[in-house]
Length: 301
Image (cartoon, rainbow, N blue to C red; front, side, top):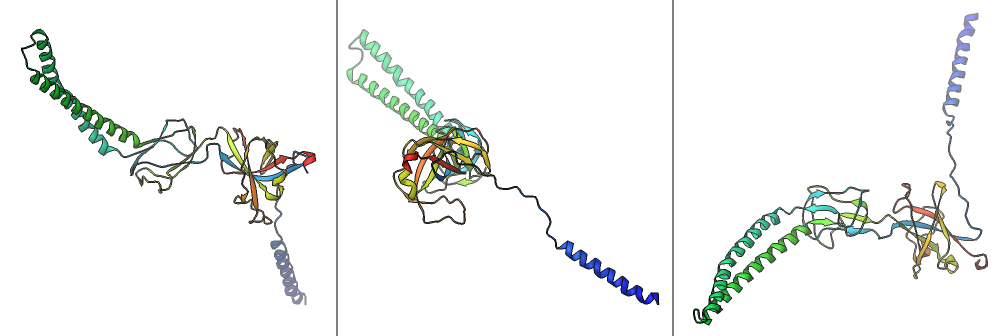
């Protein structure tokens, strides 16, 4: 009789275990999340806007004046360069061969000048001692030969200098100090030297950065030159950046730098106010978006 109750009892226990496993298996795991760090506006009365970090020099797009194969790249992304530092070099082996020939021609022209020059010098000295020893026509011929040889030497030197300039143009150098922001070429790659070709390297000064602040057109009338302003890095409310006013662009334009908020209107027009700041903080990058507060006097609300 007891055996008749054992099987149903085991089935009931198994069913209970299965129900418990399903219940606890479907229970969402507890995940510890950290709330979004908030920052307090630093002014009682203010205008808020989003700012885009820019290089003070602007983003300088660098290409090459000549087409050819990239033979050397002297920098990498993130490097700081000084004015005059080499950035990259285009293959110039054909010009190096021409340089050897041009150098030899200069030596040849210089040697060819010596003979008529010596003859003219000897003839002029002889003419001084004995005016009738050599005719005026012979002196003019010697002077013409010397002038022709000097012109040939000048031409050879000019051609040599032109080749040297062309060789120098194959090494692209930085004209302003800054930081390498982008590098869009590879060693051994063929690149085009034209105005429509994409930039091979982007350089920007980062000793001091600009911040282009978009102020909604509805608040544009509250913005005045010299307004105090501070910026905050998103996620770092403790990082407060004082700003220095530079200028205000006089034209209100369509907003292009979106904040990513779902409530943001894409047809908004904005007034752009330019501030600048100095920072050695590696968490701030060119192109980064910061939250900016501009102080508005209480009587200007």
